[in-house]
Length: 183
Image 1 (cartoon, one colour):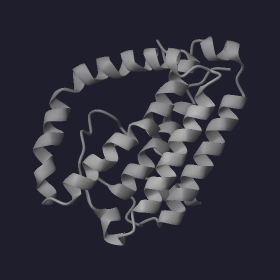
Image 2 (tube, one colour):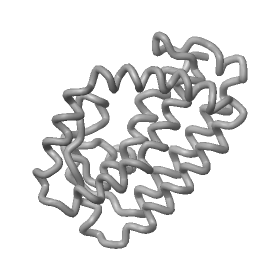
Image 3 (cartoon, one colour):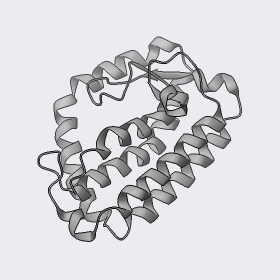
Image 4 (cartoon, rainbow, N blue to C red):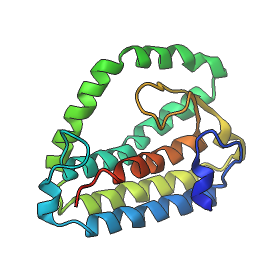
């Protein structure tokens, strides 16, 4: 039931505890997925053409890593008038083609850096960092502050992302890509 509330346009708000729970459940699901493949499977072609299973898993991990960069940005824009981030989001949408190229290239490189043997430990470090960041948001009003995002970059971005939605982003990103692993 809790994951049903993750839909980005849902008007119900999650508590910090529910977000923490979703992050923990996703960590467990990531490890179960990782445990279900072998080192040979890591190198296999995924169901996403052009990417190996390892590259997909590295890309999933990067969805969590990038949150560490997006959170301070979103918190900063969240202190400003709501419309102030709209031109920035429009600019990012404008450069979608170069972003997609870099994103695809990044996944290929990440698949080599975040190796089969290292990715689980790396995921746990990032997860711990995100849980710590959830715990540091004490002001309940801040959860609903945010900024406009480039909707052309990722179907899991909504036009305006609150801190709450931003913490849910890597979970939705994981759910989207986990079915691309080929066994």
